[in-house]
Image 1 (tube, helix red, strand yellow):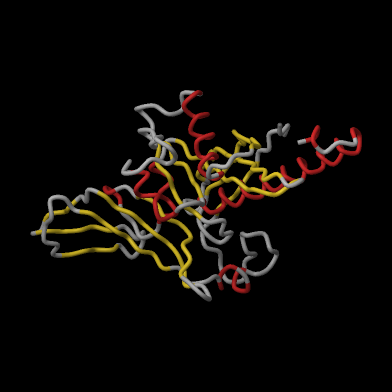
Image 2 (cartoon, rainbow, N blue to C red; image 1 turned 60 degrees about the vertical axis):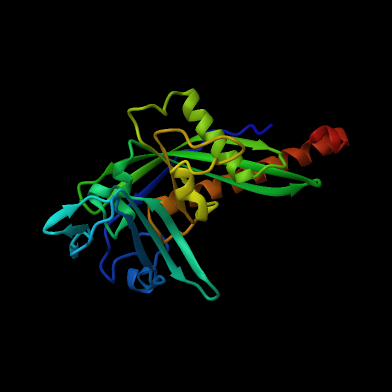
Length: 277
């Protein structure tokens, strides 16, 4: 069984720097020669209006990207709103994030949508073959977000809440989701008064179905009330959601190195593979 110390991290997010400022990604390069050249992102907002109504006007605020929909001079609040961000890769379109956004404050910029959540978590699971055994390690972090004096910036304290290894024939990523959700239920984080965001990087096509409880996430287990899944890839140049997933992925790989080292040490001391698995 994995024996790992808790690993807390700090992330900082700032507003868009000037061209000659150092890039906030930490590369040491000027912003104009680094992340300013990232691939153009396409943002798509999908809405559902029920009952159906004729839309006369859609307004997008140029300053903050907020979206307002009008019918016969009155503002319409959609039943459902979803934002996807991605870019055209060399062979196919790649999604960076996919999430449900608040219908009362829709925006083409999903980076601040974390404000809708009372608590935000991220979970990722990696698998590797060790001694012909397919091991999986799930890591989950809680994000504590603090706005800075600069309204464009904030910092995030990532507190490790789960680090577990396992073997299973079931979907490893979804087992990681269940491990985190079970932990949040046992610690009474999930309740009727909170909205909990959980960032994942798997099964993007079904995220909305899980959130709507159209289908179970695994077996006959549906997503609990008060929990909303958010899809994000481990894209360093994306939003806070992408950074959270990237750190989960990195921590999982670090733990694999520790796990492999412990197994090798065990084999060296006992001379047996079976006793060390």
